[in-house]
Amino acid sequence: DREYGGLIVQDASGRFFATAPVGGNLYVDFTRLLKVDAQGNFLHPAGYRCHGLYHSHPDVLAQVMKKYPGLPEAGAQVAMNFFTDVEKAFMIRHRDFARAFYLSGSETCLLKYEPSGSAAEDMLAAEIKNDRPTGTFLVIEEIIDELANTGTLSVVIPNKLWGNVRGQFVG
Image (cartoon, rainbow, N blue to C red; front, side):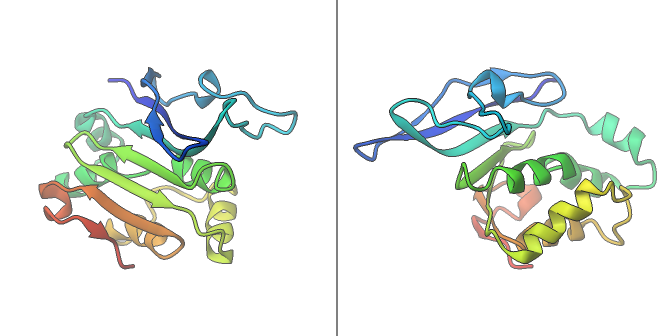
């Protein structure tokens, strides 16, 4: 039950490459792949620009159900296959470094978030940073809508959970 992650980089000729994934435990430590400056900002690898960061979520349905006992199984599946609050804050924090963030869910799906730099995105980051209470959403779709309303959220590789449809979420 580990997460894996890596980089999608672009060279000077415009070609894209993905690095081999590195394993993490509860999360992927991207400082194992990237250097940081004195302010903690990621630095692009020599000769490349980082286009995106990717990571995976393991199948931890039983753990999600235990943590949120009132959540129906369908909601737990969505939560397990979607960006967490920590990941949302991370994507917003590093939006000037990478243009896209990918999540490979445990159910063979691939999601993509492209930050907008909007005021709404800044407000979401501040809300998360101020330790908003978890589990306060009235419906599970709200965890999706808040990203769809602040940036561009898409299904790249669909599965049954996401309606077997590729495309952009509309919040």
